Length: 428
Image (cartoon, rainbow, N blue to C red; front, top):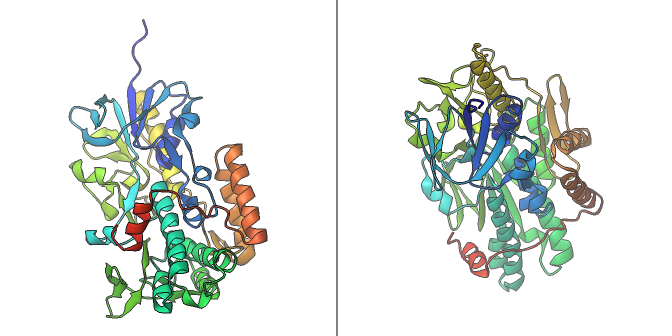
């Protein structure tokens, strides 16, 4: 009888977790991927779900379908409640999973920087349920405004604020402006576009400040051209039912506040007793291992990864997650062979962000693109990343419809009416 294969548990079925599972396909181990959802979310498309361009199933696909051809990989649907590092076991709401090697790829959640009350007064855009909830809230505001006879009340209902001018906030603000413009003129002819206000509050000088110039300035102009009010160097002090209060004392009226100001590691990191770095991420060695536990690897948004050639920790990006997941798998294979794990070397493939229909900025090393050229580059890269022909077909159909006809085809409020009413009253 052959000896049992070493057990590898991967916590999280995001970009990093799936990359690690696939890279372990030909390694003599038995892999279990555990996640609280049975689907993988293609997070770059969440803002398109929230602004009614894509269906939810175009931005997600079943994890089991993605893993079924990997003979040594299985999936378990469960919520991870903790990790016993001494006993080498992962605790879940189902049962305990023992491991010989552990890959922590639990991803990230919204960061509120010590202001937990903001979570109850704003809407996020970090996972699929949040994107659907946000779509419901936006469309419900429009429906409520159609009933309002008082111009001041209509203007209140049609006021939106987006906090955070990174890629998520910038892409969402541009898409929201196009949703409002197209929907108002076709579906709500009695509403006036001048009553709508969309404000993007960004703490730095321009949105997309992590991009090199002139890309942030170009994104700023594109947003303003779409009617978005960009509040630069705007630090948010408080969020309440009336909108935003900035640290300089000014206010931004908003019936709907979207929080896109940052991401931190999943709260699972808080209870592990491990050293945390920036954004509450697990600090790892250059080989992605956890100090004192060489059998444990942390990757993706869950890990603070530093490379010798980078002064700052690597950003929380999909490509960092994918590449670090593969490296962790490779190092597990090296340990099994009695070899030395290798340091992680990140290959920067560039970063991109759209600013509405037909406009994007792209930083690809020496190549900097804006406008339609950037948009075409964004399309090619993201089509290549979509898993499955069905998803590619769904996305392409909706993109072509949105581009040619300025149409947002998924204008559906789905969910209990009482939930929508609570959102309208600011009682999330």
